[in-house]
Image 1 (cartoon, rainbow, N blue to C red):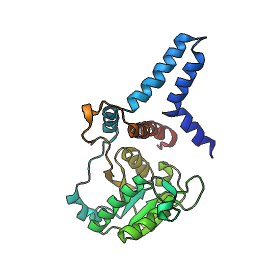
Image 2: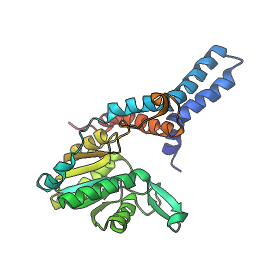
Image 3: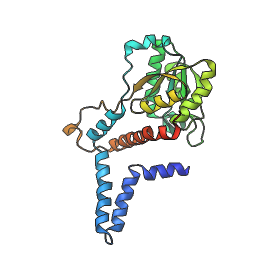
Length: 256
């Protein structure tokens, strides 16, 4: 397993928050004040990350791209050359599917949305997503299989080498731009779209954003979202990772 993945899991919430609580227990006798600060940081961080109201507020800061209204879908063929779907992980060895790998839940959301766009516009499809820690099949191949089986549509371009959003854009450009594809409809989660759009524009594409999977939309919750929920911790982690990426990508990959 890559050391990069291990470090990320330890340094990002909830890992770093759990480590802070563990450190507080270890320091409780020799440095009680520092132990208290570590405990408050760890416990308070976990508490905030579990609150739907806090998560939805954080999502609203990231989900800035406008919705692609359904009335615009038929006219996309005049504005773009292809629809690009970004990969979003995979479920491994699912017994319900004969022990085969399947696209992750977010990837399935993106596939469904892209299928609707493709049927309405007639635009060809591309999928971008590489190997999961070096193990085949690629995310793009899994998405292509699901698109064909579930929606009867063919994905024309498969970009199967990328591991990051930056590489999604860079390798898609290397694959598609020599074939005249310069304008793309980009399909990904709404909270991921600002970074994805920036990457694809840096790679030389004109981008029409097609965001979906909004976390800020929410749903009715008891006490207005101020009671903790377990799955919200995962959603908050995704948002925090995205916020860091949105800040870090221009520093790491910015071009003049």
